[in-house]
Image (tube, rainbow, N blue to C red; front, side):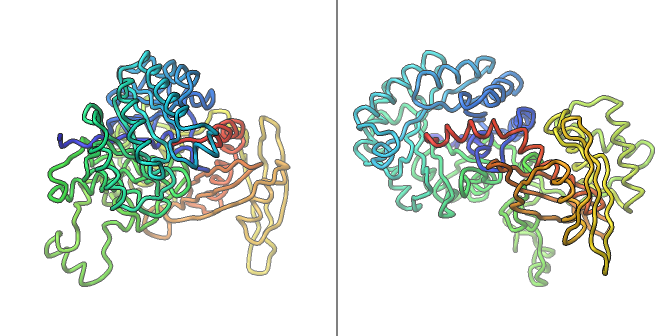
Length: 521
C-alpha cells in the first residue's frame, strides 16, 4: 500500500458552514490561494447548489486557483451534480463529491427511504457524476452508525458505478479511535473492490476525538484525511489539518513512513489568515498554532530547551512557520521593502500607490507606538485588502466618548447606513458599551452580542488591540475583527465588521440553513 496520505481540505465548505465562520467569495478565494501554497491535495470549495454565492465562490476558485484538485459537494440528486459540474468547469483538475446517508436512523427519519432505494440513488448519482469528471468521491453519511453489511454493499456498488474515492464520515463525532480503526479494517477486508479506490475519512470533534480517529484510520489503511484549518466546522468542528499533518510528520516512525505533501512552513500563516478572515481567535494552548504552542514559562523547561531543544520541544517552531516577533524598521527604504515582502507572502496583488498608502499608515502607527512588528503589518494589510465589500452597509464616520470615575459613560456617533447619514447618543456601563449602544440606536437595530474579547497584538502597553465580536442579527450569526491602538476604536471596528457581515449574509446564510436541515456530510 502506498505511503502518501492525501489532504482534503474542507475549510471552505464544512468549516465555513459553522455559525459565525461564513465567508464572502473574495475571502474564500484568498483562503483558497493560501491553501494552494500550503500544498493541500484537494480544496472542497463549497456546496455549489446551496446559493448563488456558493456557486460563484466554487467557480472563481476553479478559475483562479492552480495546483490542488477543486471539489464541490453535491447531494445524490442530479440537479446538485449538474450545478456542481457547471461551477467546476474552469478547473484543470476537478472532483464532484456526492453523498447520501447510510445509517438506519438517517434513512428512516431524515431521508424516509428504504435501504434499497438509498442504494439505487447512490449508484445513480455516482454514475451521473462520471458524465462530468473522472474524479468522483462518494460519502456514506453517518457511516459510523451504519449497519456493516449494508455499508459494505453500497461501497462495493458505487465503486462499480465509477467512484474513485470512498469517504467514511464520522458525521456526528460518535466513534472511539479503536472502533473506528476496526471499521476501516473491516471495510478493507469485506469490500472486494476497495483496492480500486482511495479510502478517505471525515471526522467530527463532538467528543474531542476527530484527530485521533483520523490518525487511527490512516494506521488501518485510509489514505485521505478530510480536515480543516484550525479544526473549524459544524458543531465542535472537524479534524484540525495542522494536527493531523504534524502528527504524521513528527511520528513518522509510528506510522511507518506515511507522509503528506503539505508545505508545513505555511501552516501558521494559513491559521492566521483564516482567523483574520473569519474574525476568530485560536486558544493560546491550541496545538501547533496557538500562541503558547512553543512558549516555556517553567524554569526547568526553559533551562532544558536552552540546553537542547528536544528536551521539551518535539516540533521546531520554524517548521510550521511560527514566527518570532520581529520588529520592522521604518527607514526610508527598509520599511517599504519589508512591507512589499509581507504583501507578497500574503499573495496580495498591489501597486506602488498601494505600498505608498499603507506605508504612510504604518508611519502614522509608528508615531503612536515605539516599535512596529510583523503582527502590526499583517493587521494593516488585512484591513486594506481583505474587506468584505467596498460598499459595506454601515460605515462609522466618527465617535466621541466621555467617561471617567464619577462620570456616566456617554457616546455620540455619526455614521452612514446604506448612504444615509445618522447620528445618536447613548449611555452605557463603560465607554465601549456606550458606543455600541449609540451605533445600535442610530441604526435602529438590536443585534444580540454573543461574545466579545480583546487582546494585545504585540508586547508593551502601546500595542495595538485586536478585538473580536460575535453577534446575532435576526437569527444570523457573524463575527468581526477590529485593530487599533485605541481599544474603544478597535472594539467599534470589530462590532461594525460583524454587523456588516450579518446584514450582507442574512439571505445567503438562510439559504444554506435550509439545505443544511436536509443534511450534509
